[in-house]
Image 1 (cartoon, one colour):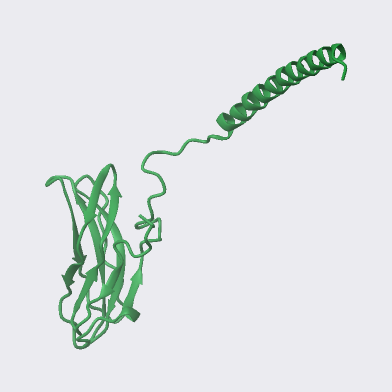
Image 2: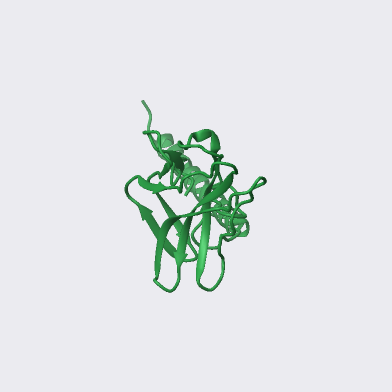
Length: 178
């Protein structure tokens, strides 16, 4: 979910370490609700001494265990690393929250190596409606027309009543003399 903007954001841990925290937040994956009530720590494997890798922090819907959990998908160390593959099949449905570039010989994860992927609708995206949204343009056009018709009839009725009232008062005041 987009509000607040920190929901399920991946951030480095406060103490220098090879870990990250996933902040509090909610998610909705293919009809299943997920709530992370507390900051969730994740540990990354130690860096390679000669090459880099890219890890993914994912939120995984596991159909067989009927659960949703946070996980690190570790990439392969290489001179030109690429992101590991996430799953979207009959067993798992993954949302990629962040990618983390683990440099060679690093001992601490910093915010500069974390790429937020929550806004990328190809790998994650934000919930903008739990159900398919309907176009309400026609509905509101009909409502406006009906309301306008009601107001026109009400105004005409009021104006007739008020004219009759004025005529009645005028007639009665003609009888009286001061």
